[in-house]
Image (cartoon, rainbow over all chains, first blue to last red; front, side):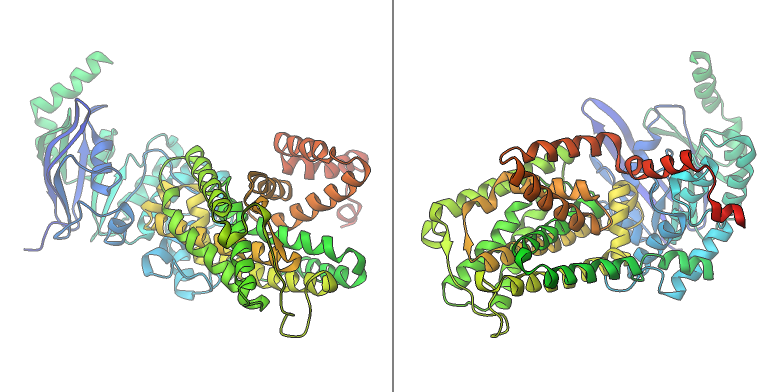
Length: 251
Length: 330
């Protein structure tokens, strides 16, 4: 049996007295469609930041395809196949979608430090940019500065950029957050069309999206993994209902 | 595909206006031999501002201590010449190399914290280097500075006061070559990564860009450029003094870049020329008062925004002649 694509082993993160992540362990097999749900403040974003290396854990380890990456920088983890999107768009406002994608592809194939060749002079990279633009319906906007793109297009670019790194594991942080209804279809279609060999961890509030997409669901509450299982089992789980109903009662 | 390639390539080819720009400078050096001194000064200031543009304009790394590298390059070239190695090209390379080494060593200090941290760190480094030059008079001449003489360029062309046009041509050649390299670098994948760091460092890292290494690399290159500018000034004036490390030089170079516009490489050259011509013209009319006008220009530029100022004449034309006749005819 092959090693999990992504594995957390006893991850802990304290912020002063606050325990944001409390002994979280899980393993995601290659090609998995897994979702991570949990009420606001459950520590989902902290967990993503731990997995991607933006913050370091107080204790525990992160393993990527059988290698301990706990002490690697975020950029090194990306080059090993761990990529993510952001809940709030993290794009390059003055670069165009074509340039942004070209950057991600160049970094991946090792020509990112090339300072003598003009950008766009490698046909293989241009072809790949064109494919990604087409797949995400961004051809018409490809030469516009990113800041001029409609919000839904920017959301698509978020996912396209992450995919341009050719990840083996993709963390999607609320990809549909704030997308107007008419553009939502495009995002859902893009998610459904993601390569099947890429393991995906979807962090999402939208239960329709989660239950449509995932074949396994983990529930995070107050920094701890409450439970993990198939969608039907999670839907039927009294504790999960209590957490969400409890949140509704407060809201 | 064709459209995509054309889009990605759009900045790489030299434009006609750029060619004209460089030819105009060259023509000016020959047409105005009596002004060769000030042209030389503007070319050197332009190279210095270009070096700041590499870190500030391309990468978004602020510095208030860029004079550190200018001073280092100048003193390195001067000391080498005063020890008897008077070849200009050798001194230029040595000045750039010394500045690059110090840039490489101090660059990791810029990786943490925000802009304020970087402003203070760069300022601090330049203060320290200036004081080191002051304290080590056995090497630098201390407060008296250093006088020295240079060998002719390529063994043929004197570049001191007796050869001011040669000096300007020398500075022009160095500026052009370094500019062409910077231009190439800016339009490469490496340059794209620098832009990404400027625009969003978090996301650049999340796409696999090793942001620390890139920042250290470009800071080292920028330091070498500033060192080359300092070496040119030292060699063409054949004197160095402690004011090369002064804070006002770091502030002036930032002024030049902001006046000319950061991020497109020509801004530093245009800003430096504007700054030096303005200073020359105004200080001839009202000595000691010229900084008032520079200050006013800066406040207006920063508050009103360059785009709006540049767009103002067009808006005015649009008001006077609402329709472009050429378009109307079509």
